[in-house]
Length: 169
Ligand SMILES: [Zn+2]
Image (cartoon, rainbow, N blue to C red; front, side, top):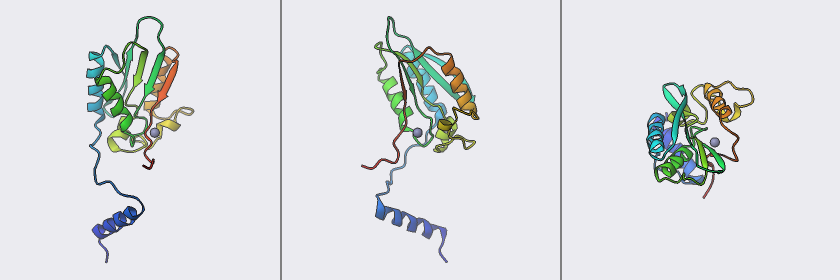
């Protein structure tokens, strides 16, 4: 009889013949901690931080910073898919290093799917892919996000940032 452990080893060996399997595990993504860091760094960099919703105790936040004069309005979103943690973490690093300066008026929704991010799943906790939810809205996250978007002025540039998780080096 083959035990569960043996099956696991066999699986890893089979996969590793096709492509290397990384033994480095990503640190768990804590949406509440990441949102708190966005709030702290955002306020320090002159952003207005707004909580536009809450999902399972996790805040849905938006950061805005208006530049004086006529500047392009740039909107960035991240964290739509919970198995793509790089975009929120990259935006946080950019925020903490003061990338978002007065060249533009900035609008940032950095953690759109907290329950997916905490689970590491593409979908939210109820199994919905938020990126497929905008035409026939079912998820509370999407409804809150659309509500926030409708309160903003038109954007000159929109960047919905995702992670190319199936790319090959
Ligand atoms: Zn994605």
